[in-house]
Image 1 (cartoon, rainbow over the protein chains, first blue to last red):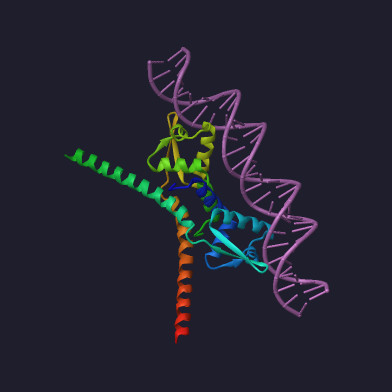
Image 2 (cartoon, rainbow over the protein chains, first blue to last red):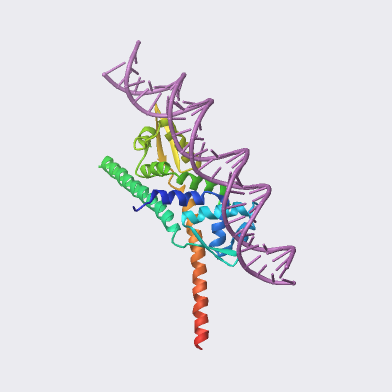
Length: 113
Length: 113
DNA sequence: TGGATGGTGAAGCAAAAACTTCACTATTGA
DNA sequence: TCAATAGTGAAGTTTTTGCTTCACCATCCA
């Protein structure tokens, strides 16, 4: 519920490819057409299309076609899920390290007493 | 340099599997042996071992063997890289949206004038 | 109108991922 | 000492990825 596993799978999977991360980086600076996204990448337009489909399935990117060009843009809230999972993990082990630190400090205090 | 692509590849790839995320969640609450990690997962120990290798290659997890048991633990700073990439993206498009908002507001002010 | 431009769809293919099983080693502890 | 425990290593299998190529359709615009 809170952490939808399949959704996180698609999200992290989408980010695990440098070409796709490049597309997201480009789109985070503003909308772009498919050819614009393809431009810096040395692969066929079909391949870029497939990457785009992965990004759309992950919810990170949306696109609509006007005329013969398809314009893509970031879905701003999508990355929030991945970000939340990561910070949750970090908080979890930071709390644990705090408890551990407190415990060790107490031990030392007991030793000193 | 700042965003090492291959490193991010391994990181996000490691997080893209629910079994591996489960292992990280478990480890973020404290160290565990391989069998303990394997316990809630319905797969062979060999499979868990292979997931562990992926996690270690990504830098997220470390382990050492004492006697016949291998104890695994989180590498606290590792997730920082992934976290930073995500927040950088978010900041990038938030700045862009701010600029866009300012521009539109100005347009409207001009219309009113 | 017709040729460039921008994008789609469907095969097909090689490599990588995610397992399994089986054989095997090294500890541990009764 | 010997069985149970904990982990390793190496194949082998199936599925998923990440491409390619080629044929094709829909605009746009000179």
